[in-house]
Image (cartoon, rainbow, N blue to C red; front, side, top):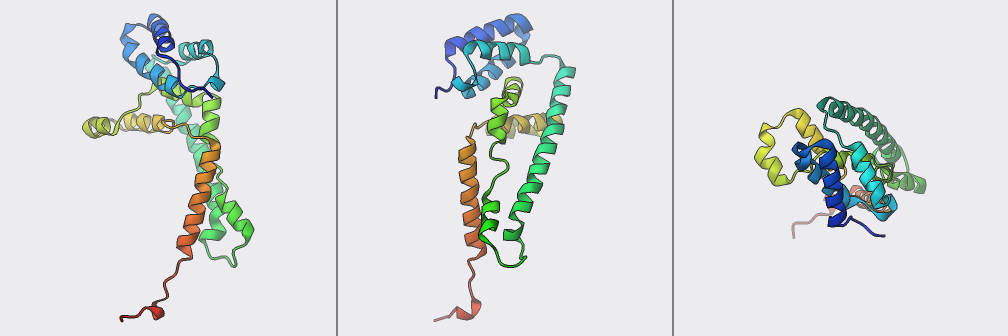
Length: 199
């Protein structure tokens, strides 16, 4: 599967966006297009579809950006809050002593309700809207400038960080299974003090 978009295509998109939104926005446009292009795969659409997406989903009006940011805030809070509850419930019999642990308890505990979230947000392009409109800040930038950032700027930085890596659902699920196995090993690794000797 081909990933990324050529520099030539990126330049064409940046030029068209600069013409539409003005040269004053060129810095934001370059950053946004680059972030999207790095994560765009052939399955996401053609270069023409990418161009159309960028031209239609780039925000310059602060009021519209605030409204868009608010939608992400509300909906992701609902999504992640409910998924957290599901994950907690699925791991309950592993984490809390409710009696003998059954094989099904391990299967529920290793099931990851988050596994498809990021992948699905790339597929329906919610992730790309964020990447197009908000810059990814390096650790160095956050360390040097973060002290002067507002709470909102920190929230925007955190939002775009959600989509820095495009990890497949299969990899996410395998990671959760590995965590569950290691967690179970640690939980059941007991040192019996009466067996410790000083000689």
